[in-house]
Image 1 (cartoon, one colour):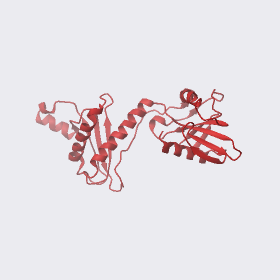
Image 2: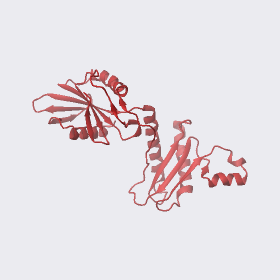
Image 3: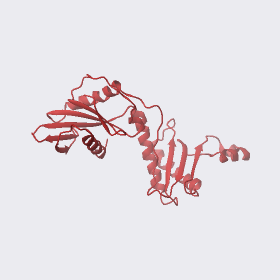
Image 4: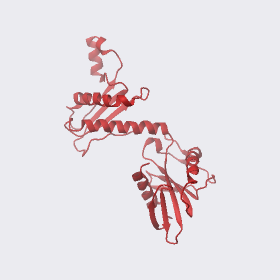
Length: 251
């Protein structure tokens, strides 16, 4: 998490945890937050995110950054505000030295394909890996009418929607699939990392761990399936559920 994300998570935890003691809040590093109570005691609060699929997170973050780079190149060249969604083929990962040329190719395709979209209209083109130069005219036209194009290598689909009410262009990040329960396996994975780091934290009267549920698919959980009595060196362990605005005290 970034420092701003950590501050947001602690702010929400502080507001929603009804037994949160009053004190002076100091943001640092090890731990992320120290709360100095009126009686001089200190509570160290380590903040982390609940991530059950780090591979999906890495792919998602790369896709968001890639989409935003394309948007930055497109704004001003498309005559309206838009939402842009580019699907990257994870089976053909883009190399670092391919990114700029791929973005340039996508920008040209977007200008050609989407510049004449009407208000609230959406359109998309999909990759079809065939030798377009060898296709007979009627086959070529059929592919073209179905929305297939020769897209840059590693790009499977490009979609744009025009919304004049938008104040800025953006990428609608969305992932799908089965949302898992938050189990002891997930908790122990988090604890195993944080227990090692705890040895190097600044000494505090108590050490708390706040696990934040994320808003993205790879860090959002369904039900909480944790048995009481798990082993940890943290004095208290919490899970903050973002969508429910709820703090669950696990220990």
